[in-house]
Length: 73
Image 1 (cartoon, rainbow, N blue to C red):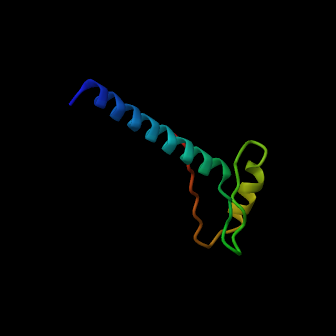
Image 2: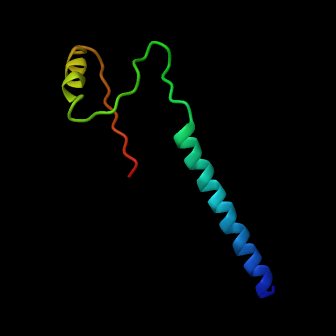
Image 3: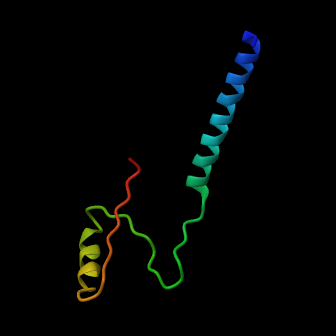
């Protein structure tokens, strides 16, 4: 294999990786955020919304409750 063909292959792989990352980023930023019918909308917890979240969570006493925390790291 010549050096030129290796360089072309590496460049093609790099361009494919950049295109894949750009597509994934665009999907994450532009994809519609919907919840199923009957489910309250997703919430972002911060210091201002923690009290209302705590009240809503505690209102479900006696029922199964699920708390899921997702982090990008």
